[in-house]
Length: 328
Image (tube, rainbow, N blue to C red; front, side):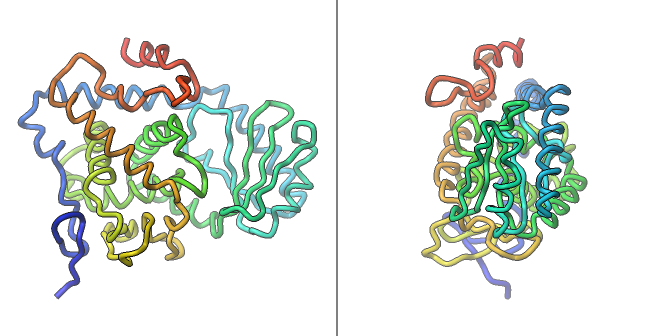
């Protein structure tokens, strides 16, 4: 008999599919107009979040300059730019696999850094070096992540298998960044979000049963995603295994989000100290949007996703302008 695990108040067999599909299975009880409105708004938001051609070209130059300096130091660096999940931002994140290379990288990057200043967090988790590119003003941060080349390959394979994940990560990263909850080593980054999406889709019965077109149901899939990771998953006792699409038992006193890394089997969530904030955010977003979803209101359903930051400023542009662009 297979071991049983708790997702919340009840139990379920390990390997069983996600016990929630409320926003997809109940779609017959709601107007088609509400469903289409949610999906249309979400797809529109995802398109707006994509960086412009000019931004992509500028980012490519900044990354190329960093790669040349790292190559001179004989340190390989990696970028997720080719995956197409980069947001409109003047921040660039790169990765290197040798945690002992921070000082060496720092010395070789001073030539392209503004005023020759390169900050270093050698004792941070993960270690990093950071600078402002003197030619374009972009903030570039390089994080040490073991086996990141293999993890990048895994990301490419999963995006090929589930193309919808690209837009899911775009929207989710936007939600987290606008609230200061997308910090490498402290909260969920692109890699952790991909693993969460991978496990979610691999264990979603309507996706696995090929009952719906994921690309055309992005909005309701994200609602299910928010419900799972914001309301239903019992983080104190349950983690996720993206490779198998399973939920796994963890130690009762483990106070973090347990994610089994499909590349090396390590715990990809053990250092995510802001996971409680992410969980609370997803819970609040799901609760608020659930009301709008059922009211069939004229108010944009995804308006909860694009709230300004605590300072009143949107992270890349004025929120009123965004609303006007998105829902005109």
